[in-house]
Length: 265
Image (cartoon, rainbow, N blue to C red):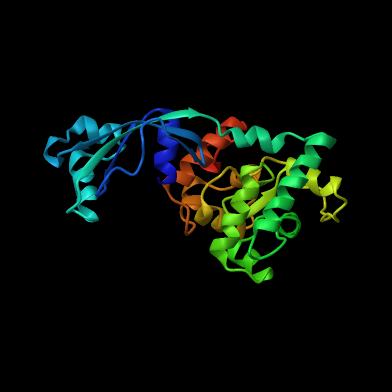
């Protein structure tokens, strides 16, 4: 699902999606972990395109019934259409897990689990070297990290996902970073850690998507206080910054007591 669609599901303004599938690909009750938290599948039913209504379009976040039908006819128009009920089901439990710092016994158990992953891997021991690389190079593209380890990107990303499932890493718009839990594992085992200067004061950018994050960081903008020095039009003119990113910035700025320059009084 697109970031704007996920944000609308979390906000409660979108509660259905329409998909052309040969057969249902999700089951009722499934909870999917997404960038905005858990999204639950509440219903799956096959429907005729002719039965779709303007209310369906609104519930799916489409601009109009015509736009909804055109979107469904754009890819695989020969396949049947399914209406999928959706609801926001809460925060991703991995968020709390990432922030928790385990005690000595739990750290030993995590280490033993990582050892098992290493033994089962066709590439050999990879868990600690990957954690150390992410610690050294946060917010670095996965292909660049994989290349440093002499690995292909797809299998590298699958392995990082295993670390993320254990709360040891966190995905960013671009690349990853080590979680407090992951840092505790490296410290407990005595691995050398990357030394960085203290971060500059201010509020970091929210999740915006890779394109928007790349555009802003490329312009030297990494904190909301810097965003507030620009007008909304100036930020929107950056290549890669679309309506979704602007809305996310607008909400984050308001939460921090800030605003775009042209909205300041």
